[in-house]
Amino acid sequence: MGSGEITVYDNKTGSQVYADKYHVVPSEIMKDKAVPEIYDAKAGYFHNPSAINLEDAIKNDKVYIEGECRDYAIYVLDTQGNIIVGIRDNPNKEGERAPHPTLIGGKHVHVQCAGILHFSSGKISSFNNKSGHFRPDEKSLIKVISVMDKIKAEHPGVFAYSYDRWRDNLWRKLNK
Image 1: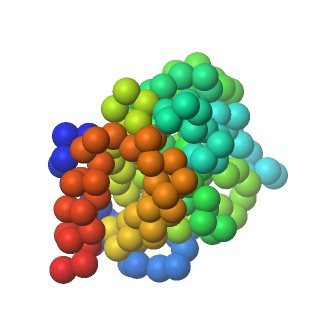
Image 2 (image 1 turned 90 degrees about the vertical axis):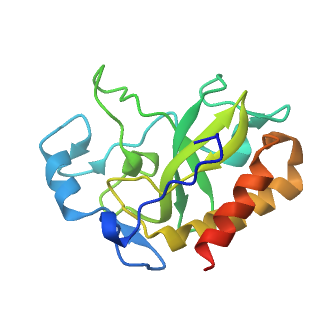
């Protein structure tokens, strides 16, 4: 994704209709309820211990999640406008996944957008709306761009050289 490719879900591929916030799609909740390491009937989704506010993960112009610069991370844009990032590894069961809702945890998880954030040498290079649990409409990426623009104003060095061109291409695609 850091190569400049813009990949997003759209209404033809199963995204939810554009909305202010998204809930977990029912088919994914049903699957998760069958996996106690992901979903508990009383508490809902576990809270992923790797989850961190993107701005808090920035150190020396790089993004560190659990002490490492990674190639990618899952993210959600929460309802308060924070980008929360984390890794997919489930601490409750080795080899099991930790889906997007675990970045917030609980029973009634809502987000403004969710997807994958890509890095190049610890710097943000691109993002998308690839979340099978929330399936946000591609227009929701406009909200993510807005938050990223604010982060870039505070931390310009945390963005890869290719990010600006990639961002501008995405902006044009979303505003057709």
